[in-house]
Amino acid sequence: MIGINGYELLVLAILAVAVLGPERLPEYASQLARLVREVRRMASGAKEQLREEVGPEIDEVDWRKLDPRQYDPRRIIKEALIDDFEDAVKPVSARPAPAAPRGGTSAPGAERAAAPTGPPAVKPLMRLQNGERAPFDIEAT
Image (cartoon, rainbow, N blue to C red; front, top):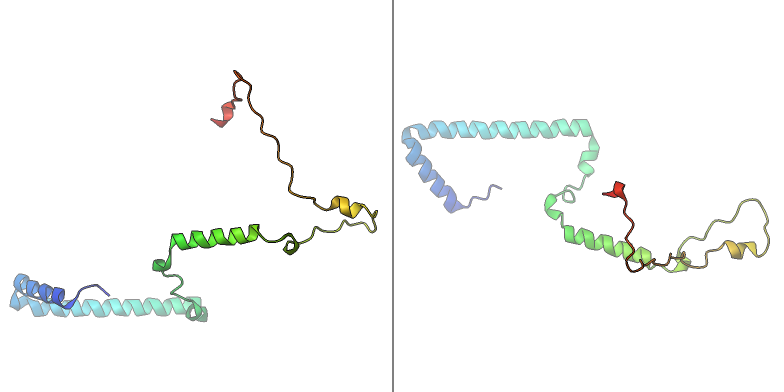
Protein backbone atom coordinates (compact mmCIF):
# COMPACT_ATOMS: atom_id res chain seq x y z
CA MET A 1 0.00 0.00 0.00
CA ILE A 2 2.67 2.50 1.03
CA GLY A 3 5.46 0.85 -0.92
CA ILE A 4 7.84 0.18 1.98
CA ASN A 5 9.47 -3.22 2.09
CA GLY A 6 10.77 -5.01 5.21
CA TYR A 7 14.31 -3.68 4.95
CA GLU A 8 13.15 -0.06 4.68
CA LEU A 9 10.79 -0.52 7.65
CA LEU A 10 13.67 -1.87 9.73
CA VAL A 11 15.85 1.12 8.81
CA LEU A 12 13.02 3.52 9.74
CA ALA A 13 12.50 1.75 13.10
CA ILE A 14 16.23 1.99 13.94
CA LEU A 15 16.24 5.63 12.90
CA ALA A 16 13.17 6.32 15.10
CA VAL A 17 14.84 4.68 18.12
CA ALA A 18 17.99 6.72 17.54
CA VAL A 19 16.17 10.06 17.09
CA LEU A 20 13.43 9.68 19.71
CA GLY A 21 15.27 7.59 22.24
CA PRO A 22 13.95 4.58 24.11
CA GLU A 23 12.13 6.73 26.71
CA ARG A 24 9.81 8.59 24.32
CA LEU A 25 9.38 5.88 21.68
CA PRO A 26 6.44 4.05 23.39
CA GLU A 27 4.57 7.35 23.79
CA TYR A 28 4.95 8.22 20.10
CA ALA A 29 4.05 4.67 19.04
CA SER A 30 0.78 4.87 20.99
CA GLN A 31 0.01 8.28 19.43
CA LEU A 32 0.63 6.79 15.99
CA ALA A 33 -1.68 3.86 16.77
CA ARG A 34 -4.44 6.30 17.89
CA LEU A 35 -3.97 8.33 14.71
CA VAL A 36 -4.27 5.22 12.51
CA ARG A 37 -7.45 4.11 14.36
CA GLU A 38 -8.97 7.60 13.98
CA VAL A 39 -8.21 7.74 10.25
CA ARG A 40 -9.74 4.28 9.73
CA ARG A 41 -12.85 5.32 11.68
CA MET A 42 -13.20 8.49 9.58
CA ALA A 43 -12.79 6.52 6.33
CA SER A 44 -15.43 3.97 7.30
CA GLY A 45 -17.76 6.81 8.36
CA ALA A 46 -17.28 8.49 4.98
CA LYS A 47 -18.03 5.19 3.20
CA GLU A 48 -21.24 4.72 5.20
CA GLN A 49 -22.33 8.31 4.57
CA LEU A 50 -21.72 7.91 0.83
CA ARG A 51 -23.63 4.62 0.81
CA GLU A 52 -26.59 6.28 2.60
CA GLU A 53 -26.66 9.27 0.21
CA VAL A 54 -26.17 7.38 -3.05
CA GLY A 55 -28.16 4.29 -2.16
CA PRO A 56 -27.75 0.71 -3.32
CA GLU A 57 -26.51 1.82 -6.77
CA ILE A 58 -23.04 2.37 -5.27
CA ASP A 59 -22.59 -1.41 -5.00
CA GLU A 60 -23.23 -1.83 -8.74
CA VAL A 61 -20.46 0.57 -9.83
CA ASP A 62 -17.49 -1.07 -11.53
CA TRP A 63 -14.66 0.76 -9.77
CA ARG A 64 -11.97 -0.93 -11.87
CA LYS A 65 -13.35 0.80 -14.97
CA LEU A 66 -12.93 4.19 -13.25
CA ASP A 67 -9.34 3.51 -12.21
CA PRO A 68 -7.11 6.21 -13.76
CA ARG A 69 -4.38 3.63 -14.31
CA GLN A 70 -6.66 2.03 -16.91
CA TYR A 71 -6.54 5.23 -19.00
CA ASP A 72 -4.46 4.65 -22.09
CA PRO A 73 -4.79 7.53 -24.55
CA ARG A 74 -3.28 5.52 -27.41
CA ARG A 75 -5.88 2.77 -27.02
CA ILE A 76 -8.74 5.28 -26.80
CA ILE A 77 -7.63 7.12 -29.95
CA LYS A 78 -7.09 3.85 -31.82
CA GLU A 79 -10.59 2.61 -30.93
CA ALA A 80 -12.14 5.94 -31.93
CA LEU A 81 -10.34 5.94 -35.28
CA ILE A 82 -11.31 2.35 -36.02
CA ASP A 83 -14.97 3.09 -35.19
CA ASP A 84 -14.96 6.14 -37.47
CA PHE A 85 -13.31 4.14 -40.26
CA GLU A 86 -15.87 1.35 -39.99
CA ASP A 87 -18.70 3.90 -40.16
CA ALA A 88 -17.14 5.51 -43.23
CA VAL A 89 -16.74 2.29 -45.21
CA LYS A 90 -20.21 0.84 -44.57
CA PRO A 91 -21.79 -0.30 -47.83
CA VAL A 92 -24.48 1.95 -49.27
CA SER A 93 -27.11 -0.75 -48.71
CA ALA A 94 -26.46 -0.62 -44.95
CA ARG A 95 -27.14 3.12 -44.81
CA PRO A 96 -30.73 4.23 -44.23
CA ALA A 97 -32.76 5.08 -47.32
CA PRO A 98 -33.89 8.68 -47.84
CA ALA A 99 -37.38 9.48 -46.61
CA ALA A 100 -40.22 9.32 -49.13
CA PRO A 101 -41.84 12.67 -49.99
CA ARG A 102 -45.05 13.48 -48.15
CA GLY A 103 -48.18 14.37 -49.98
CA GLY A 104 -49.41 11.15 -51.51
CA THR A 105 -48.63 9.93 -54.98
CA SER A 106 -46.03 11.42 -57.21
CA ALA A 107 -44.94 11.04 -60.78
CA PRO A 108 -43.12 7.78 -61.64
CA GLY A 109 -39.84 9.53 -62.44
CA ALA A 110 -39.90 11.73 -59.34
CA GLU A 111 -38.54 9.02 -57.05
CA ARG A 112 -35.54 8.50 -59.27
CA ALA A 113 -34.83 12.23 -59.49
CA ALA A 114 -35.06 12.69 -55.69
CA ALA A 115 -32.63 9.86 -54.91
CA PRO A 116 -29.02 10.91 -54.45
CA THR A 117 -26.83 9.95 -57.38
CA GLY A 118 -23.44 10.29 -55.72
CA PRO A 119 -21.32 12.58 -53.62
CA PRO A 120 -22.00 16.31 -53.84
CA ALA A 121 -20.06 18.27 -56.43
CA VAL A 122 -16.85 19.92 -55.27
CA LYS A 123 -16.05 23.49 -56.27
CA PRO A 124 -13.10 23.74 -58.63
CA LEU A 125 -9.91 25.18 -57.18
CA MET A 126 -9.48 28.84 -58.09
CA ARG A 127 -5.86 29.73 -58.81
CA LEU A 128 -4.51 33.29 -58.64
CA GLN A 129 -3.09 34.87 -61.77
CA ASN A 130 0.53 35.97 -61.81
CA GLY A 131 0.88 39.20 -59.85
CA GLU A 132 -2.65 38.96 -58.39
CA ARG A 133 -2.82 39.52 -54.64
CA ALA A 134 -4.54 37.02 -52.37
CA PRO A 135 -7.79 38.18 -50.77
CA PHE A 136 -7.25 39.67 -47.32
CA ASP A 137 -9.81 39.66 -44.51
CA ILE A 138 -8.96 42.29 -41.90
CA GLU A 139 -11.45 40.81 -39.41
CA ALA A 140 -9.81 37.38 -39.53
CA THR A 141 -6.45 38.51 -38.20
